[in-house]
Length: 357
Image 1: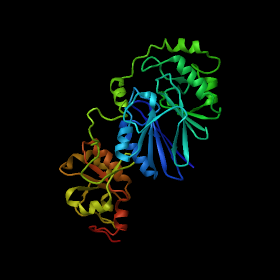
Image 2 (image 1 turned 135 degrees about the vertical axis):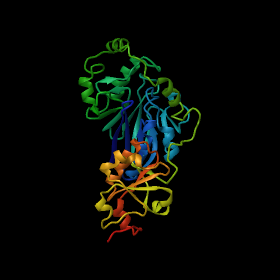
Image 3 (image 1 turned 135 degrees about the horizontal axis):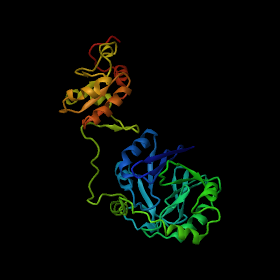
Image 4 (image 1 turned 180 degrees about the horizontal axis):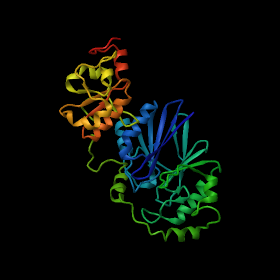
């Protein structure tokens, strides 16, 4: 069984794709975004996968790849086109190569035109293809910078992508209208730039008259992506909180485990966001906890000192997860949720004040 997730970065309108082999647990990530690495790493962990490869379809001009950062955090290897001119990759790909992950694999197809190093990754059964900026949904990538060549792009699409089975689903690196997936037969019929009876000269004339502004991040993104996303100062990743061994969830919440909290109560402020009747009820509460019900937290957050990290707790972990977002919005930098809440705390036999069960 294939594990598949399509992820989105709203700032750059970039799609990132996670594919995994359920038999082996090995996975690949296509077109990662630097700012979304924490999210992607959390998803990989929650799905029980091992990220073996990060693949880029090309050297992007509108965002910085997360490939280097993912390698630092997860030990994944980096692959992209040899023709990209990038340094720092573990593997430079050529047309016809295969990238394997468990029992599944991608065929690498060179599809230059948007850039010299554009690749399309075709799943082994040809049911899916990841086209980068070569072929977009009802459109195509630009050809007016970064070695762009409209004739090369036209030939890439017509000979390398449209040659796939008509049922093959096509997933681009970007979409600016909320479209998520297309197919070979759809693009053959309905792509206004490249489908139907559009000839090569028609396409060249169209692309040469687009008159589009350059991407806003091109001066930052291209040099960084030529280093596979490694910061120019070669700084180490320092984005993780260090006050506790926290885990970041795919839902965007930092969590701390009960054993650590029980051993370090003096170092943190425990915030109980249940109702007063629950706080004094059968489950009891954690020693020294401050009670502020969730419905009052936004207004009362200034009452909490910021001298220590805050760990939020509720009955089962849901309200307290929301509380961490409220606290972060109120300017608290070091906050975490207690997953499972008081139900888990009591089930594990941890000490409480009050309570009757």
